[in-house]
Image 1 (cartoon, rainbow, N blue to C red):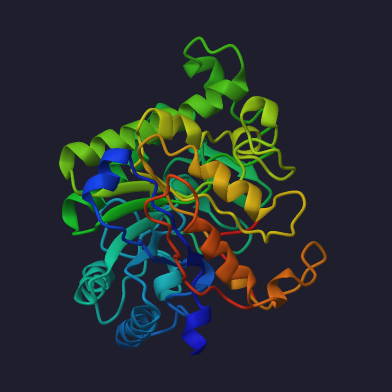
Image 2: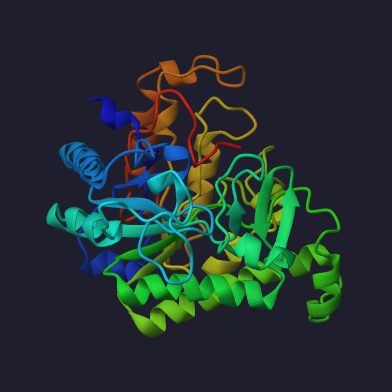
Length: 383
């Protein structure tokens, strides 16, 4: 049962159009996030042999199959690296211990990961961090051929974190190229991004890019959001042109805006729109994603961001696309100053799922119950 706690849970809710409701039966999309960065979920450590990696992954899938999952969202590109054979980016340190070092004996993990999921009738969504380049400048293994070494002028620095600058057209083109290489070469069912785009506290590091590529946008904050919107649009259109059946989704923060007056949920937490220049409502309105999976990682009792406020609010924003609620199953049995007892109540998560299944207009309320870690970190960080 230990493996049940090694993946962060994704609880999803399908929001579909009235027409679809009349012709399609209810069906839940239950997906498990499986993080590779820092060896959180898989591989469990970077010294595993390929045979051990494969055995570990099979155990994870078997547990999720027993739990009723029908999809996995596996992190194959955590920091401009690759847990698959790539001519563009180096092998990930989380796979072999050293960035750029191939598995030995050699194999390409991605076909194996996909095939094992498909054997269990699970969808396989390839999870990428589009702009994260280096997790820690102080400790990460970085190969000579890594993008942070070949194009240091593309980087923005936030403490030890390094990200690719979304304001540079060549950066967006580069990342789209990586994505489309995966889509064209592998039988993935979906491409999935998490909530790492810009980081809060950008400062003036991207002012030169703004001066060059501002597109007449009067405020740098609006320009940053537009950069992400352009990137999302290009990704969606490119995937759609190559393989119409491959889904494209993003898992943003659970809060878009705090202010009800601005169309938000009336909360008081970290905001996608202002803090990281990320506007998922724009993507839904313009139909440039197939789904959005907001990370609502709080209990009903969390006053600044109550689950009972946020889940129904997101349900009203589908615009004919799907809304999948990201659930914090990794918090079950944990305590914190902000949430001292909520997750000790074993009814908390079932009650969240029950709410999802009763929300008006939600044909498919999903309980993506990917049991997350009881302790330790989650790549899908709460706000």
